[in-house]
Image 1 (cartoon, rainbow, N blue to C red):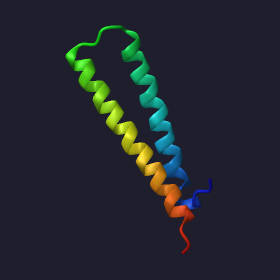
Image 2: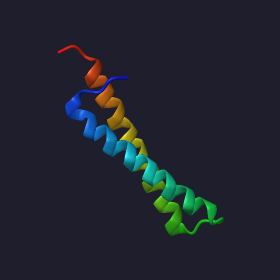
Image 3: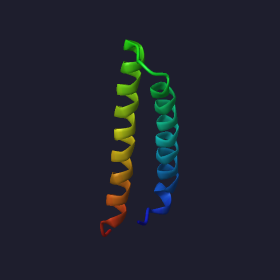
Image 4: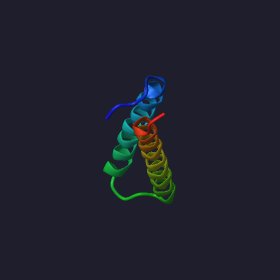
Length: 67
C-alpha cells in the first residue's frame, strides 16, 4: 500500500509505537499471574494499539482516495 509523503512520518511513528507497546505487553504477560495493576496496564496497552492501528488504516484510506 502507498502512503502520502506527508503522512509517512506518522505511519513510521504509529508503527514504532505499536512495536514498542507489543514488547511491553509481552514482558508483562511473561511474568505469569497478573496483578490488578498489570491487568489495567494491559487493557491500556491494548486500547492504545487498537487506536494506532485505526490511525494507520485511516492514513491508507486517505491515500487511496482521489484528490
